[in-house]
Image (cartoon, rainbow, N blue to C red):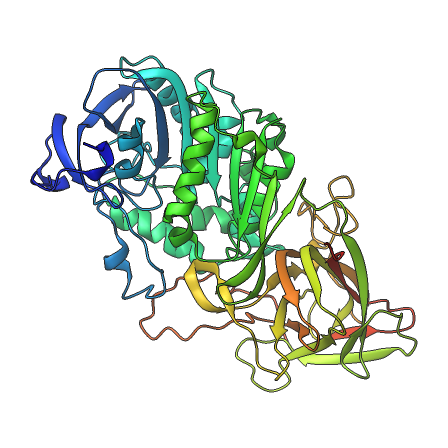
Length: 564
């Protein structure tokens, strides 16, 4: 009998029926029917400081040693799939098919165990029944992960090879522990994970993120009301610049040497998009691959196609199976055309070597983007305060005169001033419009369906560039001190626009939007927040943007030359 045909005659074991210790269970899997396996629930592991963490171990019900796939997060190691619970708030999650034993954003034991892997689910310190206090992404949490990897590597059921896998928080913890290079860690799959907390989560261009951050902290406090959880929002207010608080939580990505299969997305801008690309770019790993999609985060992770790619990677690096994984193109990415329609392209590196960075100058008379420098100087003004409906933004348009692929980072250089204050918060959006003038919506952060191509932000007092880290196409800000505006002062700024990929066909348009508040404002009458937001801006009155002549305001776009 084919082991993957399952056992329809066996009664499935519900997760709530398992007791601490060893359980022989029947799991209804998404792909292989009912499968027999062993679940060791609440296995205690004592840390270096005496704190005990608890893990769940799923393994094949047969003799032998197997490679181990592992993930760590603070959400709930025993949580049942939360997707139906979340759908009233997040109705656009997409199709997610897993076993009942799959916690949020985690690898599914119903896929890995039938393929002869052990799966270990770790409850981070201060979550579930693990002891201690919950301080996310700290040195303490990372050292815990290291210890559990080394513990697993010498268990009777492990062949000494450990791999990490998981989405979001579960990817963020991978960057950090992989940089410590635990001896038993042989490969990682960070699937969409922020790697720079300051720049990619808590402050966008220096503007504090106030919606998603607070809902994340509230989630942890609600889930673990009896545990001490770090006051992340208080810390954000106390540390508005990139100081020692954030530096302690940084990861030196260049210390990562382990083989890695990285998945990034154009559609998690404002959280994971930038950091996943940075993780891939900066890691020292000789063997590394990048897969980029423009779809929904959790749905894409749990697709059978994605699982088979994950398995091929681990089969090669954890099991030593010669399966032609090494022939996989180093970079595969989706060039988006519209919602869930795109083309897969390949490259040898990221950023793509043959990219031509093309300047499109802002023409303030025609409100257009043009390749030739603009001669006439123009001053344009918009009302930058929250809630404005009149004169609330500036829009500049470019229409393609041939089919063109734009893939990579864009950059916006602006000359700006403020009338009524000494600082400015600038929000930048890139939108696509079809030949009939209709906006082309795309999947975006937290699974929404009315997203745009790309985003950028800047608090003008944070405009000082880190010249060592910046490139001509990607400005990186220091965030170490404030450069406030003087009255009447016109200053140049460079705004990083996050990585994206879009196909513009002949007659389709790209539109640059500049405003003083969120460009995508979602109507969510339930009051639940599932998107990032910036409700504490410094904006007052009008902002001015200067174009033409000595004011060389331009949008830099990454053009990929036509290929056969």
